[in-house]
Amino acid sequence: MPLDAFHTTDMSRKAMKAEMLDAETERELAYAWRDRRDEAALHRLITAYMRLAISMAARYKRYGASMSDLIQEAGLGLMKAADKFDPDRGVRFSTYAVWWIKASVQDYVMRNWSMVRTGSTSSQKSLFFNMRRVQARFEREAMARGDELDGHQLREMIAHEIGVPLRDVEMMEGRLSGSDFSLNATQSTEDDGREWIDTIEDDGARGDELVEKDHDLGALRGWLGEALARLNERERFIVRERKLRDEPRTLESLGLELGLSKERVRQLEAAAYVKMRRDLERHGTEVQNLLA
Image (tube, rainbow, N blue to C red; front, side):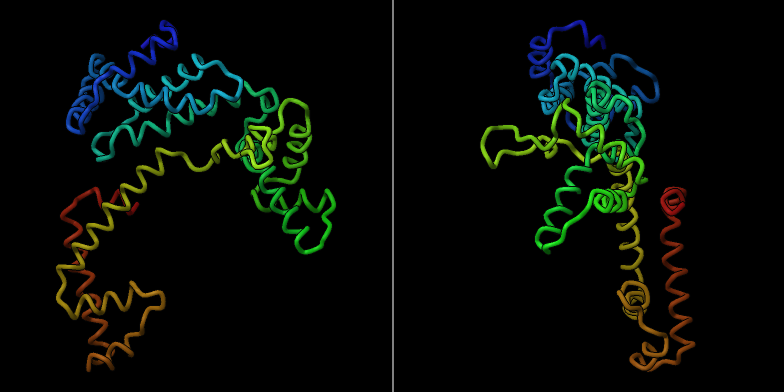
């Protein structure tokens, strides 16, 4: 999709007029692209969610880049999401795409931010997004205690808090002290105006991985709950007390409560796990993949 062929206003207007896809149509288009490389299906999927890409791009227009460039980067992220999207996961495409769009736009902003052109490692990115906020917190806490922190001590604390080498903190401190732009400057002239650094999102784990992980964990919890529900009352009680409590109970204490020997409780516990394992095996390789 040649994003640079359209004027920003024209793209926004066309995006707002694009169709809204229901879940079933979205899934069919995703299958058509993944399985048959149907370009018409890809174009329809991209066009339908271009409004999402434009909306996210607009959040970063204060960072100096032109809106047309931000939209182009957001569109590239959208196309990456479409290419990597797996409809079998059961996640809506918009939920998955938002992370790819955000990553693409943020990378573009950082590449074009003069202060961080050489800040490409993960520790440097983490420092860029978090250093000033962490430093301000330490300084406030020290002031409240009546302590004074020297520069070296403060840099060591920042390095430990963010989990980066001390030398990276020292290097980033020099870059952040330059005159390009102050991330602690407020967006307005009012005293309580929001700082620019508050508009930058933390560079944490990859979003698509978090979406897939949350979906997989939800599915696994559901299957485990079903397997547990199929046990008889005594077996469920033993499994809950042995595995689901913060402090698991001993076989001996359960035996005293149930009027059984310690060995009999162990046998019942083992039998319950066998039943649950057989129940989970109905889901085939999906369970194995989640537990791998």
